[in-house]
Image (tube, rainbow, N blue to C red; front, side, top):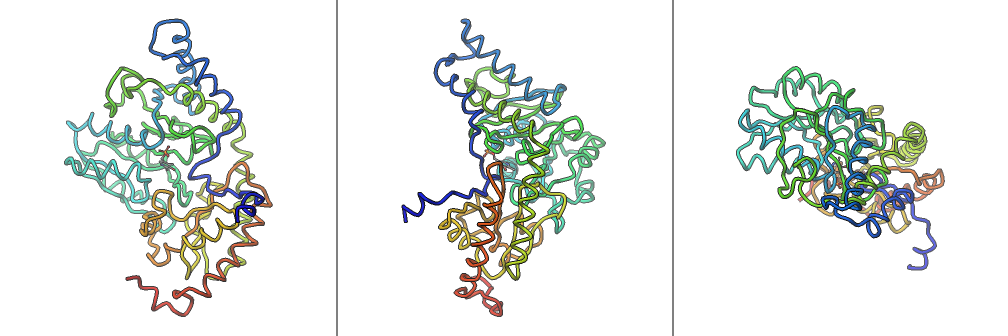
Length: 401
Ligand SMILES: *Cc1c(COP(=O)(O)O)cnc(C)c1O
């Protein structure tokens, strides 16, 4: 078994969960763990140099997302950026109102801060999506009230890759004078993101989703937005995020974003070609399976498919034995028996949502990787269907107890 594992080339198709760090990113980070270790808040020369490095990184990130009209706040990851946006805006603006609007398909880093705020007396509207996973704009217009202070809608969904109409939403929120945050964690690095063109007030990103280090993210905050810190301490990050800066992480995030932006259009096309080949092949070779999400308004690297009459988790186990890494539902909900809240919001019945598989491609993937999945998955499904009590024609048994 071990021998087989060692010989097998890993086929990693879970880039929406995380990406390996780019060698070029790692090499610019290393000096900040040792030789350039100084605390940027200290006054001597080497500390001032570290401070300059951070400010240089901040302006480079700002430039890459066209954020000259605002600030970049470095955080301890994407979840923290989302929490800062939501709780920070809620606490700073509760004198104006205590109503927040978000969607049913957000990542838990957005949904759970909202649920927490509900416990503290805020009201939250969770907007529905259509069968393609796109937020209903009429429902959004109707949901906005006098006491609405924040709208948070993700840019691209991590499970389906579906892209939301952010520019249109921004027009609505601007008209109504409500702050607009977008969790752009799956979009940044995969596509060109321009906060001015989008018209957003706050935008989250996370380095490990674009070949940077884990545990570092950033929040764009437009000038003039009222926001409180959620981590209190020293006056770091314009008073919005206390704590000695993760200099290596910040340098890594910046380098990773620069590299991603250099190749953004080309890599999108390359991954799309491979993704489409994978999708088409699976649909041809596996009876009773279909793709979730919008056919076009979707990230180029993501495909989410449902294979009827089998469990997503079982397919993943068999794929893993072949050295193929994929996921079912989001990484956070994997391991629990709850089907994906995203697929449920799209109107997919529970018993089908259990059979979902997500493949998310990345830079390392080749034609051979896709061929391998197309070679092994149809057989896995065939085998599982033969032994499944939920097999075709046994629909009456699908009812779960
Ligand atoms: C990964 C992810 C997050 C969480 O980011 P972390 O850096 O892992 O905390 C939030 N939202 C979306 C859409 C994500 O894909």
